[in-house]
Length: 312
Image 1 (cartoon, rainbow, N blue to C red):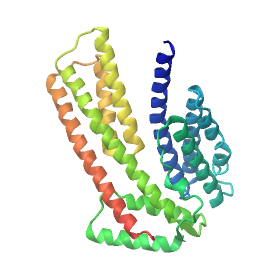
Image 2 (image 1 turned 90 degrees about the vertical axis):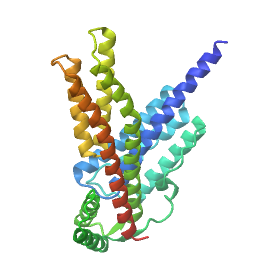
Image 3 (image 1 turned 30 degrees about the horizontal axis):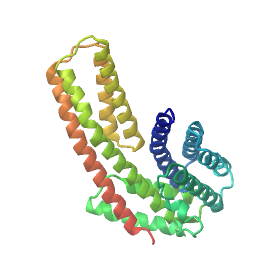
Image 4 (image 1 turned 60 degrees about the horizontal axis):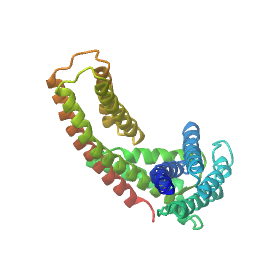
């Protein structure tokens, strides 16, 4: 009889782990894509640390709930991360391919141990294939030409093109003769995926935040339960603020930072807030979801345009 609750508890732990593992893998692959584009010294170190932290978290969590195969596959990736983490070292394409292959092993271990299908990322599946590369100078010429054409048409939706150009210019200045176009395309795709996930998260969470703002508008007491409820919405605003920073959604970041500050003041009861002020916050919640959706759509269109000029 006692085994059933224990099995159910283990199942719940695995379900939570699966959700966390998917997030860690997303962060790892996005960081790896950018790392292969030859970022500057400080950015290189930060990206390598993101990969290492994601793998550490995955291996440690797997060990905690007894998923030994995932634990072993994760910690076995450390030497491959170390091979690419020093920006001053001699890092070859083979080093990145080896790391991609090990990530593929982690995907397999996750699927076998949890029963959930973890689709191997393109970087892992195609690790043995030669990536599409073009002369870096030639790619810069194409990008500069496209940038000039966009300027003539007055098209500046998100300025993502400038980010891509800066990456390729960095490769060129570091003496990298050929640019990995396959990796660049994967980077753009995962960048887009991250924004879409953030938008969906905001859409799901904003109604709940709006309910709490409306509750505050109606007036709250000094009870411990009220304090805990306000604390919960303050923490939710902080999470949204942090998530907006991760996808570089500047306008949304500013809004959630302000929302967090406002709710913190309310929680500490430093001011008396009139109902009209809460109503204004509710209105801005709805408006910012609309603005975020427009921002994501603009990014989607610009990435599609950039992808269209990259060599196949």
